[in-house]
Image (cartoon, rainbow, N blue to C red; front, side):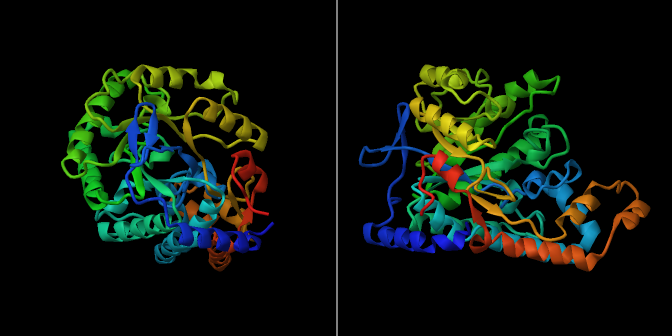
Length: 413
């Protein structure tokens, strides 16, 4: 069913929000194992990630592993259609992929929260997919946070790609190793960027908190224990620096090894408004899969939040969401919008000729002669990419009712 069929539902939700007023006029705070608003009401994180928007990932375009991170995607597509076209493509992508219609729809389902993954470069003057100034990044984020405020959603800001790379794989757009933990200069940059973000949003009540670092330190590095030892120290330094400019927002700390290992934290009393965030995907959808996380939560007496999970059947999603709620763990499932998929709120129809783009990106392009050999009709490539940009607009997407219902949310009828 086309999402355009749901405008009536969205209009009603927007009208109700206008009548009742958005519920983002106060800060959310940590209170024991729960989150509460200024009135003492428990706030439950329940929502989705705006993945791919400000940190493109190849699999969300159904691209091969040779184009699985933002840099690799951009390099491949520039080889295919040229850098001038790609600057225009990414600008339109940022305009179309997440609009107020998307935010209104998410709110209409009964979700309370969106997590926004972003590349640190959008808040610097480094070039990132055609963005060249921090002011551009703040303007973009201000706009979506404004929409969330209007529609009563809370926002978690997630630095998905840190200076130097924090994971050492495609998800952090890095060079294959978590260099952040080996470089004091990169760590200082990481802290500086967060301070600039916190200074900008210090008074913004729609922002629930700062997810400081996504999925640090992949498990397959032989020196991971040395890298792990740096993580809690860097988190403490970052929190202390942020508190110089922002006393209100929740600090959200990740476990090592893809947000699964919390043994790296031996203290958590260095701040009075922190919580922890876990991620897990391939596991039985039961409370048993959460025992390590709930044990750490019980030990600290602080909230645990599932920042990412999903990528599975509706049956699995419903079972695991039920387990999370039974364990008092808030959640934002991954992810809101994907290409030709049933494991997301919205599905982008696949453009005609998309397979030709996939084949080019899959081809051996290790030499310039091979790039020329692999390249087909540039006009046809651009036509497919233009169609993608239109298809990713909310009105042209398909809604996955079963997936949304599995989350205990209302897809609209």
